[in-house]
Amino acid sequence: MAKKRVRATRKFAEEFKLQRVREYEKGEFTVLQLAKMYDIGPQIIYNWIYKYSTYNKKNIVVVESKHSSSEKLKQQAKLIKELEQLVGQKQIQLDYLEKMIEIASEELDYDIKKKCVYQPLAGLNNKNIK
Image (cartoon, rainbow, N blue to C red):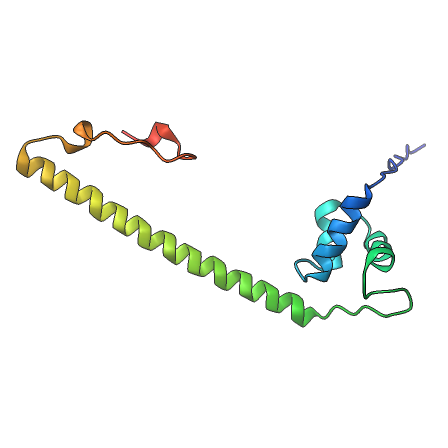
């Protein structure tokens, strides 16, 4: 006889529900995206929308078009591409400055890196800094 697993009942705080409805209304996420992110059935999220939304009420059909989701994905992909390009440019600048310090150290016969006193930026992995 196969054993069945019973899913635990979860209760959500009202603030949690309101936050999900706000995210939906602002267009940050679709109902399906919210359902996947928080492992909640889409119908539960729709119930929250009908209950807490200022303009989405029961008997009003909420239609999410694939176009809006695909447009959002295109915008995010564009942003990622721009950020990757910016990171690449910064890496080139960093490599250039490192090379300049190396050349200046050789020319002056003075180790600039070791003599330089600096405070590392918060959040950087200090193990990689020599």
